[in-house]
Length: 131
Image (cartoon, rainbow, N blue to C red):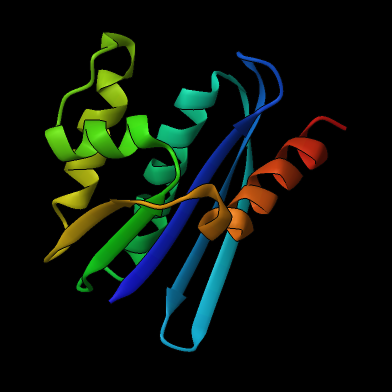
């Protein structure tokens, strides 16, 4: 099983944004940090999951994926396959499509304190991307 931790961050809402992805498989781990441009914080959170699933699709398409996020709106939207704000529905649809590749895909909400690694990566992406 692959454990995927994602976080999105924005400096302003909208504003310069970044995503952080931390992936664990047993004793191995990988991390990614991407500056994504000007987005709202919620959009950055959705984009973080998308980028993580795209990477996992190329590396671990035959694995069970357990994705964790501290963004309740993202977790709820993915679990229900619909989001109250229709602006975010294309992100939800893309995540559902990407997740369908894996034998099993789980989305789980975690507290911020359990997602610090992905948070640091997302914030570093903003700092590196703006300068």
